[in-house]
Length: 369
Image: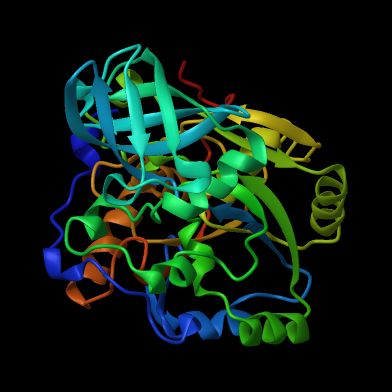
């Protein structure tokens, strides 16, 4: 499909730079294909779901994956930044480098606050390989938990570019850009639909009889990369590591067999569930990398309702929600949200999307790479 079909104009003032307070006071646009749009609040979620429904959350935990450093090449030095996006070994991360042209295989990079020393005196890395689009494989001198501790000492919360270009990260972001249920370290971007949940909202959902289960998908920085191709078939997705436990798969299968709906909180939860789903819609335990790319025409197997924030134009995530509820429906929903001053992107408001009914034939998951 043409990528320009997923374009729209977003006024810059609609981009949220801080989350709503309290979190569950954010606005929630309910989208049901064929029905009028419904303006609600996230706190209304218990009234919008049914007893027996199951919310599926991504419990990944954001790490301080934004690093500032000095590249050394003989006597020549240059300032560089790295955004880690996938761990491939205890001492190795794939990273997006900026400026990418300043690094080459074999370069040494010293990371730390303004060039100062850090854990055990330093956090050094070697550029093992140079990839395309500014990507590089970094081999750190520290490994495992020692590397993790050093990253927490010198790293910054990797705010999305549309926020980071307007303000620096601060201590508030260490809490704001993390879900209250974050558990498994490894993400470099938050599963932002989950940022709206509070203990009070969990209690209200419990009282309604809405169950919840957790999966893990370590969100990578590739989620922020624009689609530069003119056609969706030419776009390459970056893989992300995830897992669905046997217990969670069985619980979700049982809930659906009882008539409950599977409600994915965030596109990351949805992409992982769809990766783990069999053709008949049942789920199996699953673990590994996924680069599933969902565009209109995809037949969803496991998810009935999707709660998600508002996404960038021409992004893979706007393509995903357009596949879920229909392109015309989502274009109308986004136009409504812009006109009614909804707040967009990671710290913005949310939508509750119901799946479109389609007579299109089922087909396999779409993968790139």
